[in-house]
Image (tube, rainbow, N blue to C red):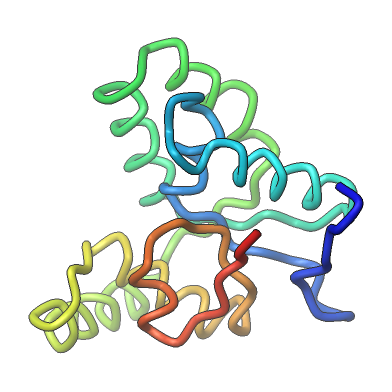
Amino acid sequence: MANAVRFWAEGNRRVFADTSYFFALLHPRDSDHSKALEISEAVARDRLAVYTTWEVVIETVTLLRYRASYESARMFLQEVAPELIIVYPLVAEREAAMQFFLRRARDLKLSLCDAISFVIVSTRLHRAPCLTFDADFAALGLTVVRR
């Protein structure tokens, strides 16, 4: 990766990973697979802490099982998930996510999982860069890693 760039700020060596990133990383036929591999290499090289939510874990396993294979879902649970810092939303964060969903999902194609991710990233993670191929994250004003 000769042209690699840092996508994290000094002092904030953490990123948030979304379902679309994990799916692309583990499903070779995904159109963003090579980009996800590059990002994954940069994350490992720079020793960044990768955060996600329990809801993203559930969504990722389900998507991998239904659209890829059992083996991909197993690999995620046994090899990827143990390396993640999983955030479990507090009751107040879940409530905020539901209210956010009700306000914004009419105009944007958001899932409740996306709304929870937004609340966690914009509060607890201090707007950490997001590893995602979901355009809604950028539309919400979050920093999205692009390769």
